[in-house]
Amino acid sequence: MEYKDYYKLLGVTKSSTTEEISKAFKKLARKYHPDLNPNDPQAESKFKDINEAYEVLKDPEKRKLYDSLGPNWKDGQNFQPPPGFDKSHFHFGGAGGQGFDAGAFSDFFETIFGGGFGGAGGPRGAKFRSSNEFGGYGDAGFGGFGGAGGFSQRPRRGTDANAGLELTLEEAYRGGSKAITLQEQVTGPDGRPQMSTKTLNVNIPPGIKDGAKIRLSGQGNPGMSGGTSGDLYLKIRILPHHLFKLEEGNVILDLPLAPWEAALGAKVEIPTLDGRIEMNIPAGLGSGKKLRIRGKGLGPKSNPADQYVRIMIQTPKDLTDEERELWTKLSELSHFEPRNF
Image (cartoon, rainbow, N blue to C red):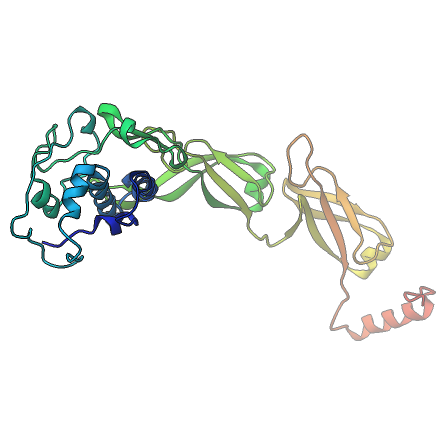
């Protein structure tokens, strides 16, 4: 059995006042309370140790008896009470002590103070004290050690969660219902965290833009002490498209044209997110010029963005002798000057 240095556990000294000891205990209790450190056995063990230390050092009689062990006892040494040591029995608990069960006090504690803990916990079931003894924990989010309810916590809303949702450009344009599968951490039957799969149906607003967020109420992280769950935010990522590019909500289509189509004008069938349409190409357009099709981009139905058709003039390769002769004749007849500098 090892000696426990209660002063060291609370981070105080033998000369510390009761007020300083209480302040140190409250600070550590906020840090290591099991509700704030779920599934962390080290935090739970630390929480039990600081409560045991405070149980002794806050009480003048128990503190005096503990101090009488003398300065030669060091943490880690095998402990046996010194010859002639007056082992007293103290009563712990009562109505105010019933509540959050921290488990038993240590063998070291019982060797010094005996097992007369009282209350419902029995000799090995010490309970922590009520809020009228310890005071509130407002800035830590606790309601205090509440009467017969023990160390209680006010209901707290769960935190929000974030995830990504990839959509094709067509899905973003049309909107509608989409089933998604997510992995979430839950508490298993043995009390340990484990991963679980859940499927949700998401209603995608038509015309949703890249980077927008969809909120799913109550699908975030679970609350504590009966609090409501947080929300789940899905950030939209629109996948690259083989035909279209996006500039904010506008859809851009590069339209290849032959030189004579650009020079003479043409009627061309082009794709849109709503299907294919015929478009009149005015004569004399150069590469890089844009034509607009209203309302065929992303955005709400009341104010959608547009689709732009960008002219890209392509020149023929691998000319036949006849084609080369005609292009040569055209160049001799034309007065067009592409460079004006």
